Every structure is written in structure tokens, then in C-alpha cells.
Amino acid sequence: MSTHCRKFLDVSSAHVTQKTMEVLQNAAGNTLQGDYGVMFYTKDLKWVECIDLAPLISMAESEGAEYVYVDQDGPILNALPTYDW
Figure 1 (cartoon, rainbow, N blue to C red):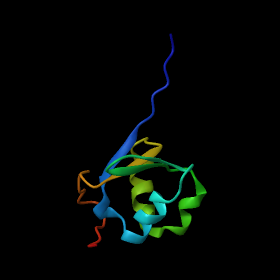
Figure 2: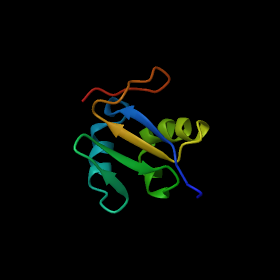
Figure 3: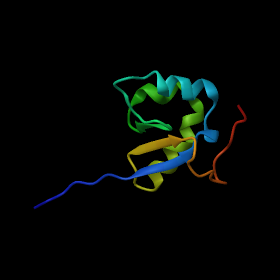
Figure 4: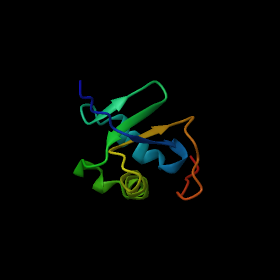
């Protein structure tokens, strides 16, 4: 039996602006919504308008991940910018 697994980057919501988090939360059909965060596909061109997602997408792709999970309890990564909100 063959399986297909995909990786995701898990990050704190501190790595996005409040406006971007609202865009992600309101993007029904383009994201996976959870109680504490949102997962999105890095290859979706919809995210080009959210410039604060660019470093997250770049890091995810450099690690071979196709998704990013932005979670209020996710880790804060020193290599990524943070935003107070």
C-alpha cells in the first residue's frame, strides 16, 4: 500500500498581522479552519496580497512543506518577523 503524506509548518499567529489573520479566517474554501488556527496551502496565489505571509511561505517551502498552520499557540520562530496585536 502506498501512502501520500504532506508536511506543514506550524507557527504562532504572532507571525502575521491581525488583518492577515482575518483574511485567512474569512477565506472559507481556501483554508482549513480550526478552533485555534488556520491552515493554508502555500501555492495558492490568493496569498500574494498578504505580504507578511511571504516569509512563512518561503520558510515552509525551504523545509519541503506545502502548508502553513498559523496557530495562536504555535511556536514563535526567531527567523520570522512578529507583529503585536
